[in-house]
Amino acid sequence: MRTVKRKNIITLACAAVLMAAAVSGRSLLMSEGAMPYIKADAELKVRPEMPQVVLDAGHGGMDGGCVSVNGVAEKGINLAIVQSESDMLTLLGFETVLTRDSDKSIYDDGVTGLGEQKKSDMKNRLAIFSSTKGIALSIHQNQFTDSRYSGAQMFYSRRNSGGEKLAAAMQKQFVALLQPDNARETKPVDDELFLLDRTEAPAVMIECGFLSNPEEAAHLEDPVYQRKVAFTIASGVLSFHAGEIGS
Ligand SMILES: [Zn+2]
Image 1 (tube, protein in one colour):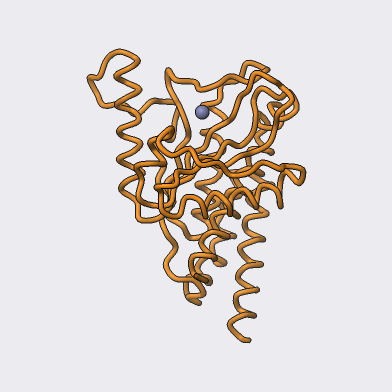
Image 2: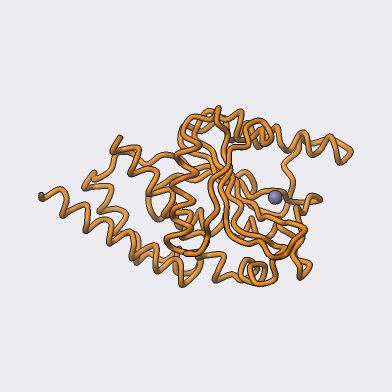
């Protein structure tokens, strides 16, 4: 009973920190005021050691990804969400590893030609995904010829252990916290997305929404909404992690 109570207190403290982070942005995220909660959490040993989280902002540099109806490139939206995500997860005690932290492609020095650079970039992202014993999240935005479609959707590989479960936890949180009308189902893509397919740790691609839908594009370009997406993903990570401890 006492443990349950403690858990509730810690969950509330984490939620408060996360909520503050979600509404106030990076400057408050780095303030000292929030740190005692995290320290107390660690000292109470309510949860076992937090796993590492690899955060991949899709595209970068010459590769802009898809483009919104307003002409905004996907790569910048992905990076903004990943940076907020990293701040929030760090506050919660996770160690984060970013595949990129600026507008760049991560191909090896000396590689020339767009095709070879893209190949080298993906190889290096896979190396980072493969090096983690935690989980890996690849953040992207969707696009379709018909502008009607909207809503986040999670993709996973059936060969990736834990991917399906992680995708389900994430999809559930998007519906619960951000998009109550989202009826999308998680989707297996197997070897279509080799980052997910060849990673041993649970890995998911998060398509946060459709840049081809005017209303959703406006949301996804808004820094406040980007932090709400990051908050939602953080809660998905916590939910998946709680399930792992329970199972
Ligand atoms: Zn993309």
